[in-house]
Image 1 (tube, rainbow, N blue to C red):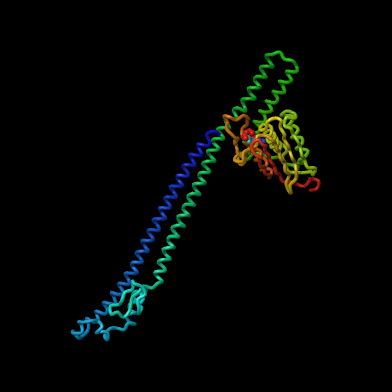
Image 2: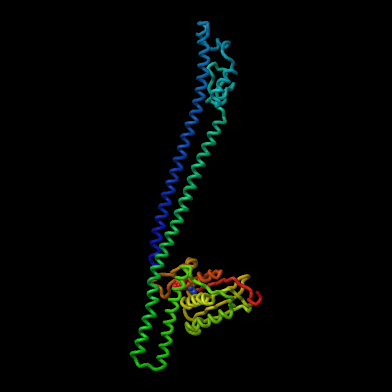
Length: 407
Ligand code: ADP
């Protein structure tokens, strides 16, 4: 996948740029919200202060009206002090002020420098602390609300972006893998067909000894087996994808079945070439399985152990019980798999490395099929590797059933 990195890094840059723009936008929006609410609260605080002045004005006009209404014109001049006797009591004035301006209190002495002395100096007007405290609280509340709404918006939109990005990346990755698959499958089909053509021509155009004919027949059978396996895999993948992969499950004793599958695979590849070692528990392990489908699983795992290891190969197949499950582990000492590729080896069409430089042929469908079949058996398959060049382990876990005679 040579062209994978640039495509993904361009996507990543676009994603980061859009996220950055979004964060700046939301930051700006939060700023506007905070400023707007600040302005609103400022206006309300000014209105409160204006009510203080209005209350003072109302009281002063009240006093002046009393003076103006005095029957003795001489008493209209001079200081207000002189008319104390005819003025309404401070209690009456306080009641009138507080009825009209509930947020204003009349106090005998000044509390803050903003307090207004009444015209006759009898008391001061002050704002109640509660509306001011409420205003301050409202300011914090609106800052908090704008910040949390902004954070929610960022999280919601970024989550959407992440989902989109992932989906897009997956689609792109699948497209690239499909493209690689087309070139891989062409190669996989062409090679045995070309080889069969050469052997057919040799058989019909040359004088050969019996021994040579037998050798050519073996080679042709290998090519045919390769083609057969490939077409079988393709058909099974198509069935698995369309949900029409039918399993004929029946109780299966694993040890006997697994030994015969491993041995026939070893013979098919080339006797002894796998360096096969079987380590089976003596405990009889039974599972409900389709022997043919499970055979495809083992064939793919062993064929990979062959393909992705250099000679002399050392392949170990272990069979063991683990609680309610039976475990089949296929281990090799081959190329190994890098940790970053491990989660993807079961993906459809995935192949490690670059199609142009890859030495080993394949289609990237084998492990996908393995996973499909094992999952359909109610089991699970995992890949692990001790590191590049240190081999790989594929662990198939299948649910055990009691021995049929005991059930
Ligand atoms: P392929 O037809 O390419 O072998 P698979 O689906 O069987 O397709 O495997 C997917 C990829 O996983 C392979 O291309 C290979 O890179 C990696 N892989 C599978 N098995 C092994 C193994 N035993 N050792 C190292 N790499 C492996």
